[in-house]
Amino acid sequence: MKCPFCSFRESKVIDSRPTDEDTKIRRRRECLNCQKRFTTYEMVESVPIIIVKKDKSRELFDRQKLLNGMLRACEKRPVPLEKLESAVDAIEAQLQNSLEGEITSMQIGELVMEQLRTLDEVAYVRFASVYRQFKDINTFMDELNKLLQEK
Image (tube, rainbow, N blue to C red):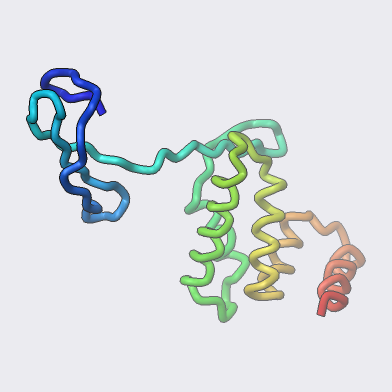
């Protein structure tokens, strides 16, 4: 870390502690050249996730939009909000860990269905019926039969 006073490139860390929000680490440093002290903050760099939609348009990943879609699927179902938030956390972590700058809305839909399948089967079928655009009762029954076979 370069000293803000003398521009020397070597310093030692005297103290480290998390900030109030636990999103950054505050480090107190001392320059090895001029012995002056200064503070730095360290935080995780997040790469923006770009969603490529069916019409090839692009938009930034919106966590709230994802949660709202899952809430709609779970409407009047006994699924606690904490479980949905955990599912959204898992999806977001998976997207961040994939290291892909762009991801299709289709891939996100599949991740949502995976999460909903474990949380609530009715919510899963609701989401799948909209996401996969079931055309008739036969495609709906095919999806239900897949669920029954998995059990």
